[in-house]
Image (cartoon, rainbow, N blue to C red; front, side):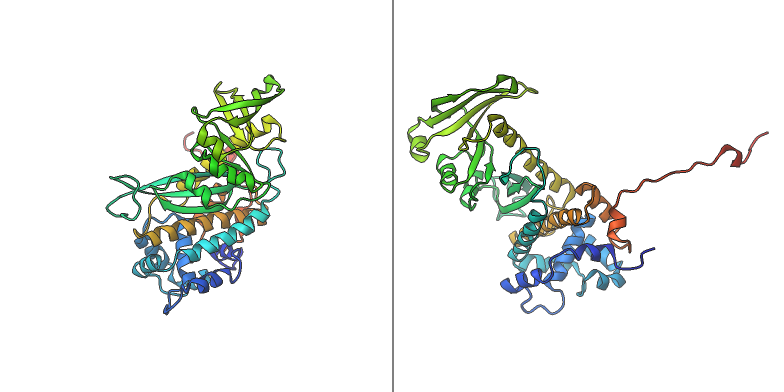
Amino acid sequence: MHSGRLVFAQLMDHLPPMVLERCVARYGGNHKVKSFTCRDQFLCMAFAQLTYRESLRDIEACLRSQAERLYHMGIRGQVSRNTLANANATRNWRIYADFAQRLIAIARKLYAEESFGVDLENTAYALDSTIIDLSLSLFPWAPARATRAAVKIHTLLDLRGNIPSFLHVTDGSVHDVNILDQLIPEAGAFYIVDRGYLNYRRLYRLHQAGAFFVTRAKKNTYAQRRYSHPVDRSTGVIFDQILVFQGFYASQDYPEALRGIRYRDPASQQRLTFLTNNTTLPALTICQLYKARWQVELFFRWIKQHLRVKAFFGTSENAVKTQIWIAVSVYVLVAILRKRLNLSRSLYEILQILSVNQFEKTQLESLLAHSSYNYSTLSPHNQLILFD
C-alpha cells in the first residue's frame, strides 16, 4: 500500500509553483499577517470546494478533526472560522482572480487540440452569464431589482475543453451586453453569443478587430438581401444570404454587409436565423457552431451542482468574489489533473472520488484510474445447510 503523501497534497502539487506567492505579493495579501497566510486561506477554501463543506464552522470542524495532518496538507496556520471569515472579507479577491487566470492559461494549452464537435481550426468561444439569487438584506451591495439581490457570473468559455478564458463577476443589475466592452477581441477567433448580446456597435467592434461572431437575429431585425448563395435544403439550411441592415441606428452602428443563415432544426422544426460576419465557412458549420454554444449552459449547471457557488461563506463583496474565483481555480485544477494524468473519467467522477479521499495516502494515478471489480460469489457447496 502507498504510504506517501495525502491525496490533497498530491492534488495541490499540480498548482504552478510560486505563482500564488507572486499574486499575493502583487496585492500585499500577507501584509501584517502573522500566521494564517493567503496560501492557508486558499488551501482551506479549496478543501471546502473539494469536499462540499457548507459553512465556515463545517470547514473548521473537519480540518481540526485532522489537526495532525494539516501540516502535510500544506496548511501552516491554525484553522479558525473567525480567522477564515476575516481573511475572506479583507484580503483582496484579485489575488485569487489572477491566480485562476494563470491556471486557465495552463489548462488552455493542455486542451488546445481538444475537439468540440465542429470541424474548425480557429478558437471558438461561447459567451453567456448566469445569475445567483441572494438576499437583499444580507447582500445590499448586489442589487438586481427593488426587492432582491443577485450576482452575475459572466463567462467566456473556450469550447476546447470547456475552460473559462474570461470571467467577470458583477451585481445582478449589469446587462449582459455591457460585458462585450470588457473583452479584448482575438483576431481570427469565433465569439458565439445569444440574442441578448445583439448590439450592432459592439459586434462591429469585434468585426473591426478581425474576430468573427455568430448570433441569432431578433424578430425586429430588419435587413435587405444583397445576394443569395445556393444551399442544400436537405441539410436543414433554408437560405444563406448577404444582408445589410435597414434601420437607421443599425445601419449607422454596423455599416458593412454581413451574412444571414436560416436553419430548420430537424428535432423541433423550429426555424432559427443566424447572423455572422464570416463569409467563408459552410452554412451548416455556422449552425453547428451556434449549437455548440450550449456548452456554456452546461458549464454553469455543472459548477452550480458540484461546486460551492450558490451558498456563500461570507456576505461581503470581497468574500463572495474570493469564493467564486477559488471555485473556478478548483475546477480548472481538476481539469489540468485530468489531462496530465491522461484520465478517461469525467470531471464529475474525479471530483466525487477526490471528495471522499482527501486524507488518504493513495497515489492519484491508481486512485483515479478505472478499475474493474470482480465480485466472486460463494459456490453452493461451500454454503452451510440449514435444513435437511
